[in-house]
Amino acid sequence: MIETIKHTIDYISAPTISFTLITVLFPLFFPPTDFFDKLNRKLRIYKIWTNAGGLILFTLISIFFYMGYTDPNFKIILMKGDNFPIVLMIYTMFFFTWYAMKKSYINDARIEEGKKPTEWHDPEDKVLVWPDLVYIELIALILFMVFLIVWAILVPAPLEEPANPAATPNPSKAPWYFLGLQEMLVYFDPWLAGVLFPTLIIVGMCAIPYMDINKKGDGYYSFKERRVGYFIFMYGWLVLWIYLIVIGTFFRGPNWNFFGPFEYWDPHKLEVLNNVNLSEYFWVIGLGQPLPQNILVRESVGFLVTGLYVFVLPVVLAKTILKNMYKAYGPTRYTFLMILGLSMLSLPIKMYLRWIFNLKYIIGIPEWFFNI
Amino acid sequence: MKLTEEEKQLLISAKDESVWYSICDDIKNRRNGIYPNYLSREVYQIYQNKFPIDKYKEWALLDSQLTRKAFLNWLSVGWLAFAAATGGFFTAMIRYLFPNVLFEPPQSFKIGFPDNFEAGKVDLRFKKSHNVWIVRDDEKIIALSTVCTHLGCTPNWLETDRKFKCPCHGSGFRSSGINFEGPAPRPLERYRIVLANDGQILVDKTKKFNYEKGEWGRSESFLKV
Image (tube, rainbow over all chains, first blue to last red; front, side, top):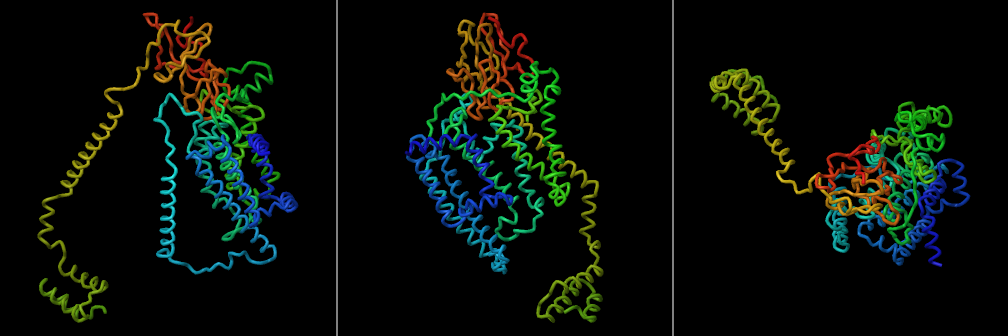
C-alpha cells in the first residue's frame, strides 16, 4: 500500500507531469477569471482557505514528510543540514498563502454584501516607533537569535571536503535559495538565467507599485478585486520560484538527473537526451541540407521566432485580447509589463520545448556567446 | 525682549571693547541673565559695525603669511603627495596579484609516449593535476579541457554511458568533446597537442582550439597516430 503511494508520488513528481499538473490546477486555486471562479466554487476548492482546510493542508504536508522520514532514500535528502530551511520554507509558505487567502475570502464576502472590509475597523491612531515598535523588534530579535543558536548547536554545519577544482561534487547544488535559479540554468544560457532574469525579477518587483493602477485592495486583504495580478504574481512566486527550489532540492540527483523523492540516487541512471538547436531542426531535419555557413542565415529562423514573440505578439495582443488593458495602462506601462510578463512566460515555454522537442536553443550562436 | 532704543544707543556709543562688554553684562542682567538667540544677533550686528573684524592686527598678519598663491601651492603639493601615496599603494596592490613563485603546474607539459594511451579510452590521469582529459580513438589523440562550457563546473566521465556529464546543470559531452545534451552551448575546448623531440606527447594549454570557430581541423589540435 505505502509502496504504491510512494511509486505514484515518484511517478507524478517527474517535472513533465508535476509541473503540468500544478500549472493546470493553479487557476482553480487562484481563479483569475469568472470561468475558473465558477469551477472553483463548484468543486468547493475555496474551502481550503478555512481553518479546517488549513488543518488538512498541514496534515497532508506532515504526512508527506513523515513518509519521507521513514523512507531510506528520502531520509538522506531530508536529513541533510542544507535542506532543513526548505522544509521550514514549505510550511511557512503554505501558512502565509493560506492566511492571506483566508483573510481575502472573508473580506471578499463582506464586500459582496456591501459591508466594509474587516481592516476598516482597525484603529487609525499612530503608535510611536520608540518604544512601541523598537521593543517588539528587540524581543523578536532575541527570540530569533535563540532559535538560530539552538539550530546551530543541534544541526552541525554541512561542511564538505576542501574545495578541489578537479572534482565537482555530484550533484553540485547551489545554496537552497538559489536552487530555483540553478533549475532555470538547465534551460537557459548563463547570461540569461544567471544575469538577465535575476535583474528583471528584482527590477520587476521594484516596479510593481508603479505598474499597479488598481486602487482597490489598498490597505486590506482582498483577492477578488485584484485577482489577475494576484494570479500572475503567485504563479511566478509559487510555481516558477518555490516549486523550482523544491525540484532542485528533492528531485535532482547525481549528474543533475531527475529522481522521484523516494527513488534511490543511482549515479548510473541513464537518461538519453539529444538536445538540438532550432537551426538544426529547420535546416538539417526540416530541409535536409547542412547548416549554412553564415551565422545570421543559420539562425534566421530563431531570430524570426524571437522577434515574433518579443515584438509582434505584444502589439497583436494590444489590438485584440488585451485591448482594454492597453487603454487602461497606456503604452509605457503596457510595454514594460509585457517585457516582464513575456520574460516570465519564456521560462515555462522553454521548459516544455526542452521536454517535448529536446530543443536546446532557439537562437544558438556560441561564436558570439549569444544563445536564447 | 528686544533691545530698547536706549540700550542700542549705549552700545553704539561704547568707547572701547571693555566698556562694550560691561554694557552687554548690564543688558543680560536686566533680563535675569538670559541672553537668547535673537538678542545676541542684534547685539552682534552692532558689534560688527562698531569693531570691524578686519581691523584686527592678527588677520593682517595672517594675510602676509599665507597669500592665495601660497595656499594654492601648498594645496597642489598636498594633492601630489596624496596621489603619489595612493598610486604607490595601488601599484603594490597590483604587483601583489602577480606572485614571484607560482605553485601551479606548468601550462605546457609532457604526458608520456603515445603507446601509453589505449585507443577508445578516456584517460583521467591528468584531470586532477592539469585539468586535461586525454582521449585516444582509432586515428588521433586529443587533449580536452575539463571546464564545462555552460558555467564552468568539472564534468565526470561516465564509462558505462561513454559521456562526460556535468553535475551542476546536467550538460553532456561525447568523448570527442561535442555537446549533445543539457544547456552547454558549445563543445569542450581542445588544447594544442604535439610530439616533442624525445617522442613524448606535449600538451600546451596556452593554445586553445574551439569547435564553433572551426579550429578542430587545424594541425596541432590533434595528434595523428
